[in-house]
Length: 342
Ligand SMILES: *Cc1c(COP(=O)(O)O)cnc(C)c1O
Image (tube, rainbow, N blue to C red):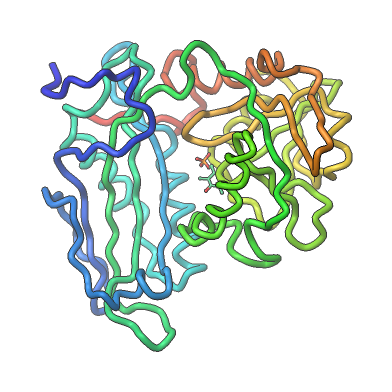
């Protein structure tokens, strides 16, 4: 029985300080072996690289208690690999992928009281991140880095079924052509906050970003990848160098093909062909898939045939199947679920 007694179904997506976090340091050209610590606060130089030149990347993944009492983590190897790619792009030393997986296990085991019970819809969200820590004033990469994973319980994304969301086509870009749109870096979020505030103020849920070079093709939202369903039930996802490769979206495409027997395609998607699709959804760890009902571009409104009341039928099937796999209620493809031994 867990010591912590939260109203699991209603905690939302907020930070709760849990008991332990994993911390490793890079110094003199190598990562140390890392350890669990109690202190949730960092003590850094005012001139630390991360504060001046934003050398930072991060990840996000969930651990869940399953029906038969296991602890299941969804594809953490993909997070380890993606963080490796982000580190290379930001001139940071990649964190060893096997050490990443080991750290994930340690953090979960050290915070079992915070792992939401089965049946609440809540989960334990893990946030790995890496920062440059030594004082740097002339522009260059840091020499010392910290890798850290903390966790916080998060509530179920949907209460009473997935509701379609509304998107606003942003007049801003979330990444430059040949920029950093394809890595998970805090800097991509810092510059999207202004557009996000504008979008919320106008009553929309998220921005839709177009390709930064020509503003002709669909890229993604601020934090999730698109899938579109054609009128012939083909699942299409945009191809672009500026999209962050979502693990949820890649899993969703696999599920569409191998579990639902649907044709899947990754290709450039023109904004002006949106009117031809039957359904739309956005994919990410937080919500798995959010159905999209409406997209507005400079006052011009497009409502997908699936409408604003319910998810489209294929979107709903994909959501239920992928959620079922993550919750271990549907058999997962080989290697998709890491079970953590208590
Ligand atoms: C994290 C993120 C996503 C979703 O990726 P998942 O691996 O599915 O959680 C999509 N877009 C951006 C910009 C992101 O940062």
